[in-house]
View 1 (cartoon, rainbow, N blue to C red):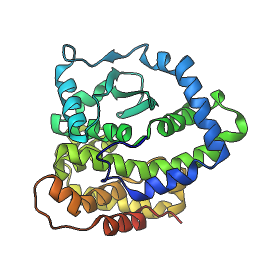
View 2 (spheres, rainbow, N blue to C red):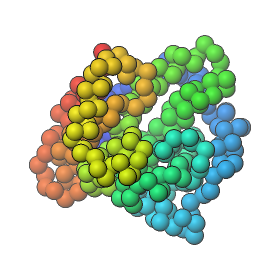
View 3 (spheres, rainbow, N blue to C red):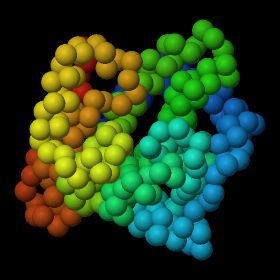
Amino acid sequence: SSREGTAYAYAGERRFARAMKAARPVTLALEATVRVWKTVARADLLGSAVKVTEQQFPHLYEITARCANTLRIPVPAVYVTPALGTLNAHTLGTEDDALIAVNAALVDHLSPEELTFVIGHECGHIQNNHVVFSTALHYLTASASFFVRWIVQPATLALRAWARRAEITGDRAGLLCARDLAVGQAALVKLALGSQKLYQDLKMEEYVKQLDEGRRGLGRLGELFRSHPYLPKRIEALRLFAESAYYRQFVGLGPDGVDAHTCDGEVAKLLSVL
């Protein structure tokens, strides 16, 4: 089902998602994901998690409610969990039963503004109907035994290609919620770097340049096996969106800016791995 307010979404992701739905390994993986989520995975994930409410973690609830209001979606369920293993947040579940799982360390690691970008990013996944796709990829990667063996590799490869595009849409949603490009860039780099103290001494432009040099050394095909674009690509894609007419009008900077077609065309060149 479509939702209001998704005009910001990266068009390349939507096209890829439509094409991917015709692939039998993907459809089987999505069907299996729904069954696994309802029978095992949800309870397993939330066994050590704490739900965010107005009474419990009110600051995090307020951020979530503000992001939901910005994107015009119902306030999603958010759980703080130590079980994710990495400094990150994930949106998991089904379209009717979605939740955002936030690694507990994120709350200490990021500023309230940066948390707004991260929560907004995850709310963007919910708004754009990414939940079952992202959940399928998560469990295909982490628990392949839940799935019929022959579908795992082709479904995983297709979903990773989709996810690289979906992350662009999520980052745009995060920027709409945070309303500050510098905050969005800082959140992305802190998640990648894993250290708030080191970030304080970091020169952003030098760091991105270094990462970009490393990316080129790996070769473009190396990205085929990743579920996220390389960090320099995400930062550049976010900058491109910040220059778009949609974003500038959204945050009250005026009607000028790059049109959506041009912006998405530049992002498509950026994300290309072939």
